[in-house]
Image 1 (cartoon, rainbow, N blue to C red):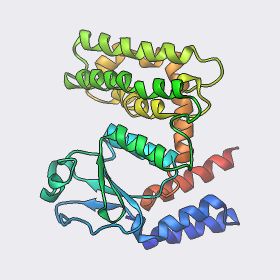
Image 2: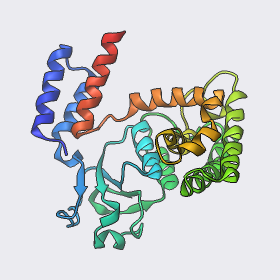
Image 3: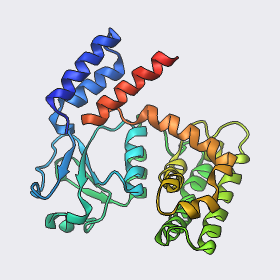
Length: 280
């Protein structure tokens, strides 16, 4: 959770910069607003949190790729929210009574007026509801909008194939081959772009990019897991188009994650940004 120490450090950060920038002002509000502080649902805190009267609330776990999709959408749309970290092996009983039936992510509306499950539905809802930040679906091109929304099938294939690859730690050559073929298809899509690094040759990330990034990030991380032998056969770093896309996605997502971040992550991000500016 955000703490008094976080606010003290943020104050020191503002002093270092020498002025209160717009971003620092937003971060200050986030660090000092208790309604935006992360809630950790652990064994000793199994009582359902009271309704948040002002902000949306996202239930999830940081390691879940589907939760990451929702987090990216919230960040790109610049929507303030409270995160509720779920301990998956010890989910409280009341959580199973909510519409997601114990699954994550789950978006809770202010005052618990409504709930929404499924990462794709959450992303689309945020884009349709908020005009802030990046437009995840184009409003002036129905044909392109349909293509981007239809990309859900491609992303599902990637997720399913990656899950299958993980279940046997990449030992099956057939599963490595299946995942490689999907990655090559995505790679070719990016290589066909004429002007921009994002899917469908867009100047900024869209719904399609949000669908793919969490899975592709985890594929790259397999180099450091028990699936590293399969990862070595998969050779994702050879896919120049996807690696170009990934580099740009990580840069953009870093600068957007997150306007309302709280707690230790907020302080770490501020320090990293300061370090980057000094290097320049």
